[in-house]
Amino acid sequence: MKKIIYAILLLSSSLAAQEPLKLRVVFVETTATEKVYNFVAENFVGFVGWQFQMEFDGTKMRFKEVRYPIHPSQGSQNFNEPNPGELRYVWLDTDLESNDYLDATVLFQLVFDLLEPEGSPLCFRESQEYFEFIFDKGVGDFTLAEILISDDCYQGFSIFFENTATENPATLIVDPITDVFLSTTGMLSFTSSIDPTLSLSLFDAHGKVIASFASKEYAEGRHNLHSKNVTPGLYLLQAKTKEG
Image 1 (cartoon, rainbow, N blue to C red):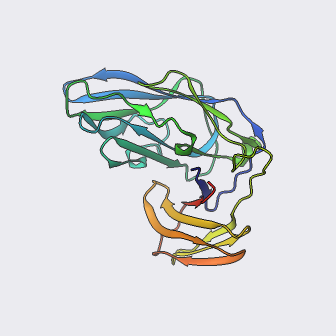
Image 2: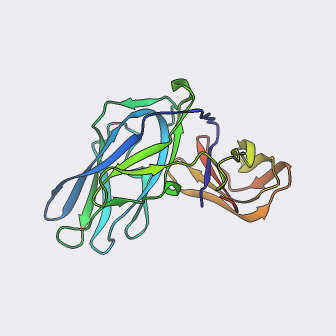
């Protein structure tokens, strides 16, 4: 089921498609205690944020840290291993300015502690629902239609992003909520446009859950929800409908 991610205080429009983004994790070395990968990107143009998920055998190695990030905000703090072998990465550049890197640039190194010699394969989750991207409006209106992932499981595996929110290709995407607002007192407001049933989750820029709201129907109009106090900054709102 596809989830819709809203970047609060950040608006992004998407019309035309850009070249496929290529993401690669390249094995570097295994030492007596660590396994190291380079994280490489091509066609990295216009991004201000993204999220993805990776998997490995949590009985054989565990995430340790990020080394040598090319961008200071892409560090260990952006990764979370909620369960052994499940690695989640959420990054949002707080200056909201486009980050463009030359092809084959190593964005950072991923380092794992070895629990067994040689560790385990490291692979992206191979479904579109585990990837989200946010673009800088200044680079033009475009959307990401395809990414190519290469890792210990795949070499140049294509993931295509749907242009519709249903199985009917003639149906246009309609945002179930608009005009999202969050105050420092934890007041979360939005306008519902299509009487959807939604489950909502609020995250900080590092992917930590701030608040979750159980699935319910939101009638057309303005709604106010309450979470705990938050500090000024950027937050992500995930809205999931029954239809995806």
